[in-house]
Length: 388
Length: 169
Image (cartoon, rainbow over all chains, first blue to last red; front, side, top):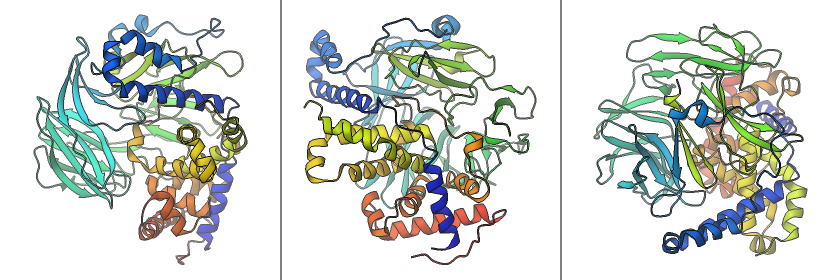
């Protein structure tokens, strides 16, 4: 081993010592999840029965899942319910499509049309749908073509200019970008491009072009209806943050340098470099805000120019690359038991109770525009763009 | 099938080790917990077969590595049943080179990081890594070379780690 490899071995072994310990409830949590998933699979196999016998199916779905309902009221004070705090942002939807399948929401195309793919933990998406959040009707936009030797299944769904786009990747590292008309119709291959094994890390529609960046770095565009892939000028080694803003090195920053600290508008040439202070760690910037830990380990949030710095209300939340404005955080009662989950707005300082009481319910993660979660068998969709 | 008490024993005995492995694979406690949980659910589903024919821990570790490199998991991080405590506080981070390397690892594409972890944490040979990840040995070698080059570049400016370019294998 050479010295770098020796250092790597030491680094990884040392890091492993900082890993959290498994909770004593792990086995039970795994068992509950396994049973829930098994029951879901059985329910999916009996899709017709699910539709015909809703009551019975609901019973069956719940039957094998030990649901820990809150036996006692939360001892920790939760903020007001999200319906009260941000009533215009919330949509209450059935957790399943009309055909009985679970689904994943990707993007609100307009006020009431949600781009969704039917999928759950065990299955990959086979089609993309337009879902009406008012009537709860689903309209198939396109079947998802998955060529042989595909190793990265349809991901990165985005809509714009009357099209929906997504990507896949073949074994050996050939990334493929697909497109279909939002009005419905077959998907077609827009472009193929060698990609590193991470594939694409951003994909969006900007006017008549698709803009994307690769996990290994590099921002490119291709005409929406197909054509030649062209590198964005000055976009080598860069990553798309939010069109037209790109960043180098983006998420792959070196130590002490914030992720997306320096961003550039490729249409105007304007650049923005976030203020940083010596000793700060884990700094992540979005278009507006930066957050991280000070040299004393205290979480902060401030604008990119350094103004408005204050303690980060989300400092205890798990870091995500999704939204710089919003975070979700568990509220714990006595001991480590979770009594609720709150959505926090770093801009206004407001918080809302999401109504999640089942400690096994997954933590929702705010993406830049959207967040969703399940409460008592219903999907709650939060349109973050409707939060003033 | 009712729960086999041996599965619960396995989780109790090996949960921490799997979480350590998940942490070096994923780089943060949340994704580590996600990986462990997902792998254990899969192991639970195959428990009877795996316990008889395979090594459950090896099965879980292989599952975790494969889950980690599947790009479609990028959107799956919300499926977490417990909140691991954030333990990576300022005072527990190592100084100097190890911290720089740990940070540089975060900049690697997932498959490159997986190869590095399997080589230098799990101490697997390239052939074993190829089997775990379901890729060719040549791919493992090229991924490892690219990862090492990136890490070398990342740490070379400030680091005291000598950055000789000697080929290890």
